Length: 229
View (spheres, rainbow, N blue to C red):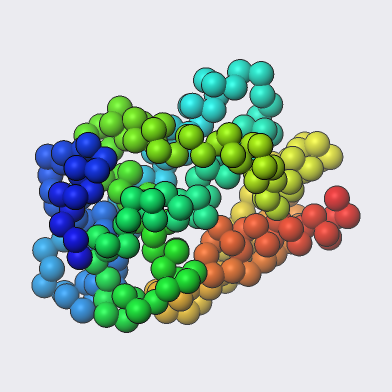
C-alpha cells in the first residue's frame, strides 16, 4: 500500500484525522485476515459518501441547468454517480495503490475490483465530509467529477436502461420506478444480486448482476421489453 500522503498532496487536501482517511480504504476482507487492526471497514463511510455525492451533484445540476426537466437532470445525475463513473474517478486518483485488501482480494481484477473501487470512492467522499466538511467535499466533486458531464451529454451516455425506463414510466403512468433486492448470494468479494423494479406494487421486471447497479439496469431494460416501451 502506498503512503496516503501522496493522495493528500495530489488532491491538495490535508486530513486532520488520518484514521478517517485510512479507514476509507479498508475493505472488509482485510479485517478478516487482520482482526487486530485498529480501524473498522469503510462501509459506513461509503453509506455517508453516497448521500453526500448525490446531494452535491443534484445541487450542481439544479443550479447550472435551470431550464432542464427533472427527467434530464435525473438521467445526468445517474450517469455521474453510477458505479462505472465512480470506478473511472477512483482509477484517475490511483485508488488501487492505497486499498487495504485480503491476499485473495488483491488477486481479483475485473468486475470484483471495480465494485470495490466504486465503493471506496464513495467512502473517501464520506471521510472528506466528516474531516473537512461539506465545502471541501463539494469542491473535490465539482473539480473532478462534474467536468465529466459535457462528454456524457454530447455522446448520449446518460440514456441507460434505468434512465430510459424512468422517463417512460413518468410519461406513460406518472409513476417513478423503485428498486428492491429480491435475492442476494455469494461471498463478499463476488456478491450477486437479483433486483426487481416496481411501479407502485406492480413488479415490472427483474435483472441479475454482480453489483446492485448492474442488476438495476438489467431490471429496467427487461421492464422496457415487458411493457413494450
